[in-house]
Image: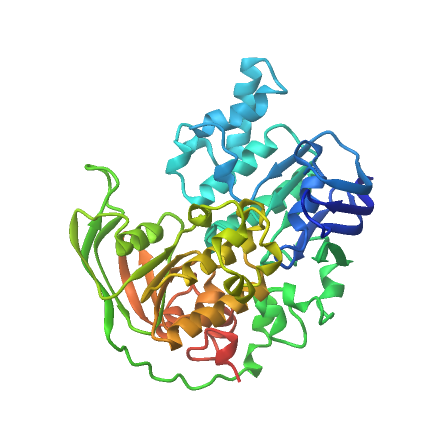
Length: 486
């Protein structure tokens, strides 16, 4: 049974002359697991919203959209924007109250849903106190509480660390396999998904470029950019790290160049911080150094304190003990870049030269909130680039950015480094960390137990490391990125 069908679908947003969707024809059958990919601004979010009439955008539309179910649930990119209750139990109850009026039936449904999604122990927890992975699971559980036929997720992994991402992928596969629910996932990272999806739909400039299985598309060089790094490394095109390991013996690595530390521009000593006077320490006697002209990455699990660390380093959060000493002016890119937007249009936020440099000159008359997630990230960086700074702190800078945007960001960060600027960023994107950083610090249990040159640190970790390291660790000494391979 065809659950969703579009025929020659065209859509244009108000006050825009460019089509967000152009001649989109697509069929998704009941029970499919579909991966939707494409560059930032390619139309993915617009297409997904057209599949649920309650959130379908306003604008000029032609063609046909056919939805053969009244039960479609939608999980947005940032679950925090969709939560309506303070507690987990209330969030699940709210999702049920529109369809079930009997309180005892609602209680049974809450219990069943919480058990299936491993949320029983969190039912009476405040959502604001949950980790990113737990929030993602609550948002999916709330979406599934009403027995939907289709679950649509827009960039659900953007805020998650590797462990939480794998947990969510496992849960989506269970929902698809065990419940027969159609799952449609929009994402910039296909790792862990290409081998379980039924097909991949790739969009470009509002059009569908490819609509095929992963087995067919992996040998298409035009589609290869959207596959995991493990697929790109070998002519055999393996879809998983497990498959790629069998080819790793053919790889060799470059010699690691010795890295000089340089002048210290930020020093943190014995930093201790808690959000409440008698609450647990988020940071405890933490020590950290950053060097001039170097790129420093801080990695760790959701809720490990990475954002708190950045805010303390920037002086936004005041620790109750310890010292933060900086030598130079700082700029700060928050995890939610919307906090930087104060004007009504992109053209008011940045000048035309900056807009061209960050490929935003086509959006000068658009409101910043109307940009895609990746475009918002670029605008946030563009705003900061117009300021004078010696040190820039970035919180999850690759969030919502496609593979091409990551390359642009890598070039920008390395240019800052070459110009003598110091970059300090926190990230869940371990492959990006392996590509761009000079130094890596692992934050865990309120302290940084290991810090050092990127090869040293990422080679010593088994779980918080890169795909290249996982593939090559039995054969190569310290390769952590594709650039380390010969």
